Image (cartoon, rainbow, N blue to C red; front, side):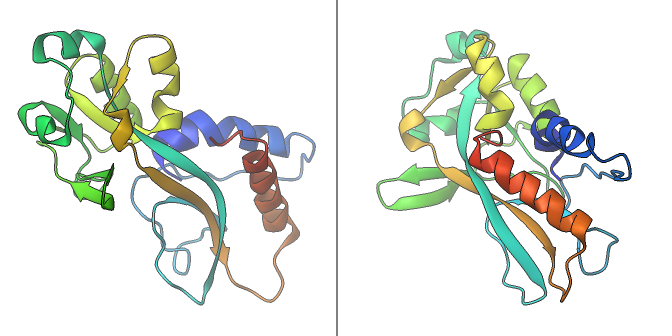
Length: 201
């Protein structure tokens, strides 16, 4: 599962899910790299974004996360708040890396959802580090709403360019097999129930 989303959102829910069943144990991997369920010893994976077609995997959509562009209020004061997508080119930006989070940002334009390439002033491979860097005033960042909602509510980050906000789908994936193990089915059902209750938003 992605690092920041896994730690901040999923981990507390997974812990709550296994409490009633002492015989269940968790082995969790937090990584921005995409795991190969068919080759790695992985029962369930959480993925953001568009999925590749596969007849060997089953996917269930859990939720849709809004992608938020934001920055620390202290950063926005001297550099001025961007009002258009073109303004981003003159800003310092925090982006992912080639092997981790995306270096491009997905935005909603009049022609639909599209990608832009912001200045890669700072490149970080971890979502939590990106949040911390933005709070520290290093520049603009785009992240799923679950990762920045608290900081925005506390006034440590301010959302900008809200009219251009896009969304990203979150899925749970598992290997297609004739008989799904009860423990995998239980965890998938739990994730689906949490999503239905809005706990993954």
